[in-house]
Image (cartoon, rainbow, N blue to C red; front, side):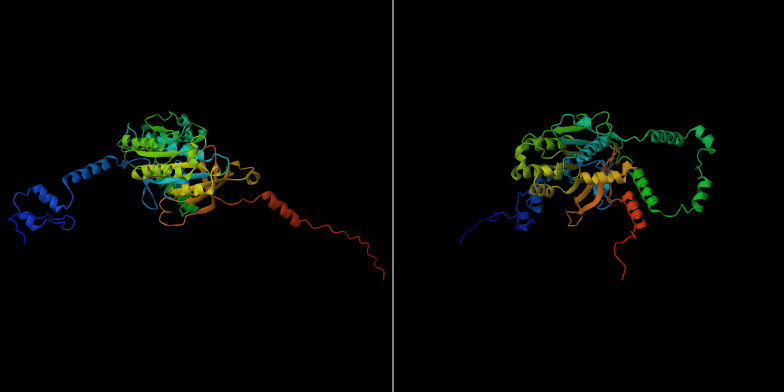
Length: 446
């Protein structure tokens, strides 16, 4: 039998078993308010609370500006998305852009280089967003570009914004001059300041007579695009591939990282970019992924490749509210198992399949009088961001075709065109009667 003094505590209450402080400990003399507060909160200390407050403050400090000109909600999931630099690609992805925190892989077959156009427009779109006013970080920028490449002249190869043809430029200048509220425009239009300009009655009569007010599909699509343009005027741009972005991006807008470095050094530089550029959208580019010229031979092994891609992916996921990733790769340089593993580590993937020589010659013959309609290959959709993770099947093969024009990269539904010359020849062959010979060598005498 043991004896103990009054007020002596044999053991302290276990915080896991008793999350709420017991009445016996409250009766003990000498307990301070700090110990009582710690007892009520379980095993959480004042230091842990301060750490949580610090982490919350850092998260708010690194939050992306809500008025960023290059971010809009996805019409499919309401996820914030950013433009890729190609309006047709934004539509194919299903979100009118690439959602934040997601990655896109662009595969390309054969020895062509169509994917470089998407890479450069993606980079140029980020620079244009950074130079667009309308956010709290005017002067400091709102977007930063990170490129893993050994090309020191990458910044000088970005395309410029398409300004339109000479006629379009003149028309825009005239329309802007007419839209300005000046005394000359008011006197010419016969209106006074403060009164709305009435619509011409002639246009209304023509619209009523010919039924132009009916809901047409093309008119609806044009109206929706105009609405998006009015709501997000600086979201997406059209780039002229034949021109160059002037002035070229500087070190304040672009960070070049050499992929030849060890993996810890690459990841450390990526994390340093996110710490340095707070409140900015960081667009990461991996052009010519695993190309033998730019990447060491060790990345041809899955044991070295998987940690490399997984490390970059983890950096993007840690900053999912203000980071996107785009990479391009040549599928002919790697085996099917390697490509499958790479596709697994990306959130979305598309494949560019250029047409063979026979198909290209056929299209040139069909569109001989319309060279602008000649497509250059098929676009296969392998995965879509966010939607494929939910288990939705969005694999689309041979449904889209792409063409790389002088002004932009276009994606449109694919359909095999009909050669009119072959149809006309078949009709002529069917209409022409066969010439029969009435001469015979058979003797008809009985």
